Image (tube, rainbow, N blue to C red; front, side):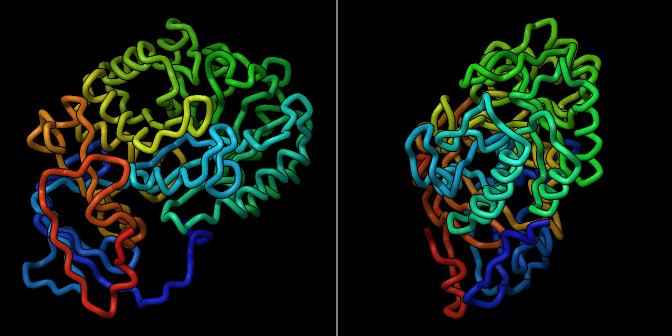
Length: 412
């Protein structure tokens, strides 16, 4: 699944042992925390949890009794080309998000390209934009993140050949945003079938208009028949659907529901508590809906899990699972879980000095950001010893690396 991110390494694949783990979060909502004390990584993937005590590895990282969790999965970003975002005139945002613990990002369409006329989008234009972005931003690895770009903005008049082009470009998502759903129900359902036949999932903008002012209003009456794979930012992006619509969507549908940091805080609390109270947290996914009018928020996913935990009553381990495994699964990705055979996307973190928490779970429950010490993606250490986007954790970490593998595990 990660073929388009592969790149030639200068050093052979090697092993890394992470030991002295204090808290271990799995990313699996059904069993979100386990008493795991060490992880063996072989190349890009996790080889074993709690390997034998005499296990040897090329490199050893002593976690100092800190927390280990999967790399965060941001289900809603708006890239353009590379690491530039014209909406905030910023370069390097993807690398900064990695320092905020996010190792996977999923485009919710690349609509911020300068000069793009939202009122005159054509099938060939939107398809070509998705293909080009998948071939550029979708290849980003220099900052370490997996960026799934190439999400098409659906418009009327598309043919099956357009969806063939998207599938050939490895697009994983299609988005209803400006599409006039009420007037084109039959065509929209045909698009859904074409997408699903090609392994492309469907996301739809919900609530009131977006920053452009041109998006379609989408509430329960539309979602009930459209049945997307993911309803985007159900608590607002930035304007939510009505409370009655939000309740009906939660109570009577079964597709994935996304909460974004760009939304309405009251609606977010309403939605998350209702999902929790009805035992439907498995449907919940998270994203930031950035970069955009909300800004560039490297700690956005950390803020999200702190909010749904400290304000909405979700347990810390469940919040982490929602921000990782839940969001990845809804988008059909094999990331967000810490188990043998899965990609070694890992965040090592701890409470910061002054935090009310004595553990990461305590800190998150209180709404405190954890301090990130290490970020690992596909077995490669991207952040070593100190994130530039969070305060440092209190605990000390010790890393040893044999000379032959210094290049692979270099700090950034």
